[in-house]
Image (cartoon, rainbow, N blue to C red; front, top):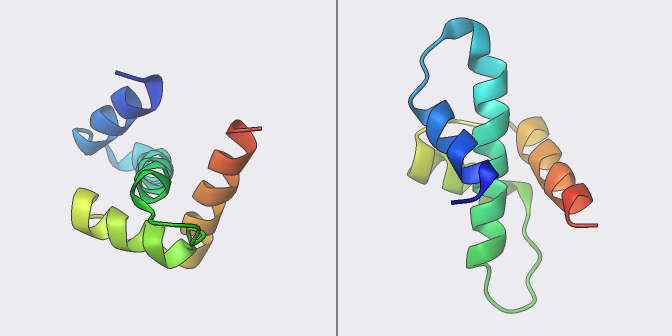
Amino acid sequence: MSGLWRQVLAALNSDQPHEQHERERLLALGAAELAHARRSGNEPVCAEDVQRIALTEFSVLLDDRQARAALAQRRNQRR
């Protein structure tokens, strides 16, 4: 299991209020990764894809800024 998915699972199981921002960041990253893995054809992944996956898979509601930041972070890690 990759490091990202271990962190995502840990974030899903955490309910510490002081860690909420980090939890949402990790879940957004996981949703961005899933969005890229599930995309079909040459369609680019957008913030709405990340938000939809975060809500359906992780039951977390992300705003546009969080979704775009996750996409940017994923893109930078792939370089």
